Length: 251
Ligand code: HEC
Image (tube, rainbow, N blue to C red; front, side, top):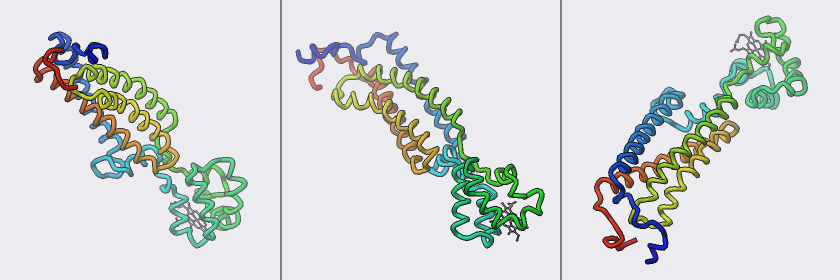
């Protein structure tokens, strides 16, 4: 009787009418294909950054944070131009480059060092005259990863789109039988929570590469929880004997 008050215990996946089962099943199957295609897309778009197959932490860092040690200026300062500046000066220049070469630090921090250490040669080199701001900025250019605009668009599309998907997967799964209420609730909540972690981690990785781990954890989290819900739902609709209030004994 307790279960009766719990509401609609009789309405479960094993007892849905055929048309509803067909509707739910095709939704779940096509969504599963969608997940696979999303996986392929991730492999193709992020997976290749480091030249190796498969998505690694470096791939994620390159995608969101960029490859900030790849500027001509930093490479030169660690290589052939190393002898021309002190340790401290090189550190200042490299930090400036990695921050994305902000304009407001050029006159105060950067140009004094360039004038003192580099100008003697470089002001004679029209193509590489580092005392000219445009040229300096050109050699300081770094790959800072995905643009804020694109990240905003991606976040927006994912938040709206994925929550719809999780809504329906969770809705269908909520009619499963034989699963502890708490466990069921956790499984239904996980995709939403992990998707939020995933998207938050995209943004955090943009500023701090360490958060790339959370991108992976978040992505896997909702992928696995959704997979479990889909498999259980399909199984109960098509392979389980109908369960009703008289035949159902365990909770
Ligand atoms: C003694 C002369 C001399 C001094 C001092 C000097 N450079 Fe250079 N630099 C060169 C020459 C010559 C080249 C071009 C050939 C080469 O790349 O080695 C060059 C090339 C460069 C390049 C281009 C590298 C590339 O990949 O195209 C950068 C960036 C650079 N220097 C930065 C600096 C900075 C920053 C300083 C000051 C800390 C500095 N240089 C001091 C002579 C100098």
